[in-house]
Image 1: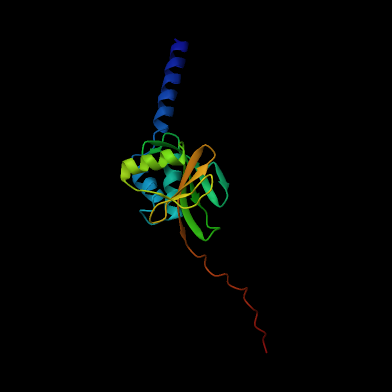
Image 2: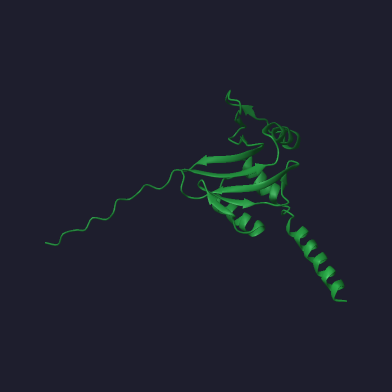
Length: 166
């Protein structure tokens, strides 16, 4: 009997793990549109969304919080990670790692939403850009897609000067 309960427990754990690996149904609307620069880029909003649906970021590197997004896909392409800018840069951005080459990711986006990209340099690993500002770049054998918008940091205030009393 004990072995049987162990199997049931293992089966339930497996089912629970599968259920947790599902991305929310809003992933395409929220993150997908953000990556295509179709929405206001608000790093706090994206951070809170990812925190709620995928848990805490697994690293903080390069001016961004990195989230693993198991079970997520956009445009028929697996999205393994999403990164959101912290407040250390003049750019606010949301980006993602796609498990596809830039060429295949671009084809999938064209097929699904009709957004076309233009190659904007002549390097061996060219950057692709769509209007208004979404970009696809090489990331080893995968690709990164991101939307970055300039947001100036508030001016640094000098330290207060103490007034002399007369």
